[in-house]
Amino acid sequence: MPRPLMMPLVRGELVGLVWVRPLKVGQDALAGIAELANIAAAAGADEVVLAWETHDVATACELPIVGPAPCLNMVLATDGHVLHQFPYSEQLLSRSPGGWASVAPDWRPAPAPQPGGELVPPIQAAENFSFTPIELGHPDPFGVTVVGRGRLPHQPDRSLRPLSRSMRGRDIRAAQSR
Image 1 (tube, rainbow, N blue to C red):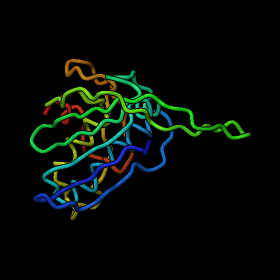
Image 2 (tube, helix red, strand yellow; image 1 turned 90 degrees about the horizontal axis):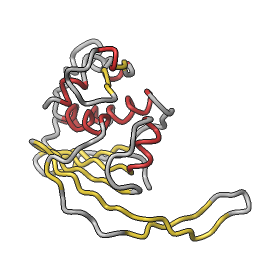
Image 3 (cartoon, helix red, strand yellow; image 1 turned 60 degrees about the horizontal axis):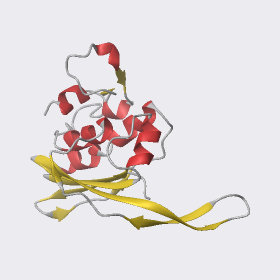
Image 4 (tube, rainbow, N blue to C red; image 1 turned 30 degrees about the vertical axis):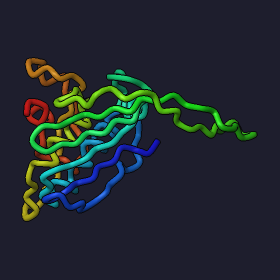
């Protein structure tokens, strides 16, 4: 499965396709996935499509698995979002002498699209920040964002962690409450 990706659209026209950068497990993965929003925000996107694999994001971000797994997820977001999930199992095609496996997806029946379906925090942040204008004239338009591993607004700030410089000034707590 491909790394998480985003396709921003402006008035129905695709203006970009961006895959998440190479990530380190943990906080860097949370930041990297949220940073997908930068291209959409810079382009003034009014619609985005995000795609990711359940196991990949949960493992990279050290989060519990939410929803079917393994599963290819796609979310279409404008004013709110609709989550589409495509569960599959893996068919082993071959194994190399070095131990690498070649697999193919065996697609399972897909559940109905879920308007407002639950998204893991970095995907939710990427969606929400996609529609947050970036002040490109500011000396440092990207800055430190805070990503919480939980979704409850009453949790104390110690449950939050700083993200990379590229998201400075953006706060996932506000993004998750939208």
